[in-house]
Length: 175
Image 1 (tube, helix red, strand yellow):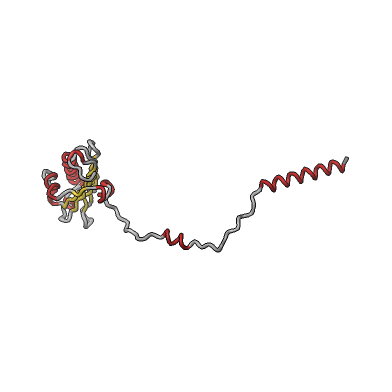
Image 2 (image 1 turned 180 degrees about the vertical axis):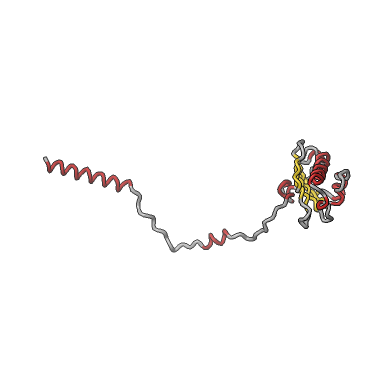
């Protein structure tokens, strides 16, 4: 009986080992080293690189392909009532392409202060200037979201950043 019980234990151990062997993972597959990856690497190389930069017009208006450049004459007419705006070099884009007035969905206004206007203004005056530009833009394009960036290329006059959601209030940050 001791032999039968030892034989059963041996058979049970053998069955357990066979089950473990069947459930275990096999060896790693053999890799064919004769195939090279060089063509795939060459295809993944970029054809050209672009300089990283922030363009507020592209951020709001979808870039040059999805926006209209607003003429300098039209900008002068729209912002004529804003005090001191004539001292800034204004540019703006709107979208969708071909839209005017209430059909415009987004407008991005960028102003450069190369004459030192911002340097002579305190934070409250800069806030008032930004608010006036956004209000005039909201009047000209009542259904548009408007973004604003006024900067001093020399970096000494600070900046004005603002936005006006469609039909909403102006938000202006001035430094």
